[in-house]
Length: 489
Ligand code: AMP
Image (tube, rainbow, N blue to C red):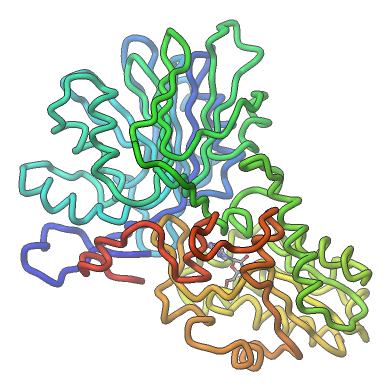
């Protein structure tokens, strides 16, 4: 997570608060009860953000807002909360910040009263020039209420000299750099937009049962559609702005040079829910294929293939199928504690891993085990799991990772620690293996990962995905970072 820097006196107005977050967004255009549906959609997108959640609705007369810290089920558990959000149009947001204080003022959707009326925005992704924009906006008199990068959208729209909402919105997105999938709501329309490289996902769906023929859903992932009973229509394209109003759905492509897309490859590896379909590819099937590639690339003789649940399960199934080694649930995960990754200190994180995972001796004891996980970040999880599997009687433990080594931080919305805290940034594979305590360690290659995603291999001149976390090839300028306007975690 990148934090505001205090390096110059000029920047003292900027909070040292958390800035980066992974998120899920939902938008609803006209149905009986937008708030309930939005909450259902957010529920299905809970994996994209577990710290806070919010919904803004419009009832044809006024806007209503409820935002809170916690899981969707906690924030919207009281029926009176949903009842306080009347209206047929709504947008919602799940926020995931991994360290630091989560404050209510940072919880989205963000809302502002403008010349043209109320306007709410929910953002998934991360902007890379938000600090630079914020400096000049603050000098112009804009009063920031939060420390989230997303607030620059609100101020850019507010000061835009264009007269109508759409032109102001487009004016704003043309000034930002970075990754964004946005949903926004005015009294007349729902707007959805993806950045020109389409780094974060965003899809359009339709509500078939609504009395209104013109009822639409926008969501981060297709898994949200099933929970809302909506049908998939299509992915929103990179660089596309969709406007939904009483006349139906319109599409605008405001970026002339919008030639290639760079969807985040880590969404396929880890972040998206496995039942989602992105760009016509099932995330689950992609993960299985990554596992099969991994089996081909780093085969080892063993008795069982064991996933680190839940993130390693589909890849382990693919590995087991491709290698003809039996798949077994040798580690059982408790679903009653949160992601260990979000615990703030190493000590608590270590404890968290023990609470979260238990070994199933029946399938491990006396066996040569291939352990499969999706990624190694700091190495805490792998080290602990390898220790546990050995303690459960495994004779050999071979760790296989369904992504290339994570050597670089993400600046586009996947929370990763600073480079120097990434195990693969500071250690060779042999050193990592020794540190983790495995008998062998293997990662899928970048080409293997691309093959699993139905590409021949990585096109090094013009890569098909954003894979900066693995390659260091950042497709969008890191303006704030390069100008040292942000500091890393
Ligand atoms: P670590 O213990 O720091 O090496 O983290 C690795 C584990 O965290 C793996 O099991 C991944 O499934 C999971 N993971 C990887 N990236 C993230 C992320 N951005 N947020 C939460 N969990 C993650």
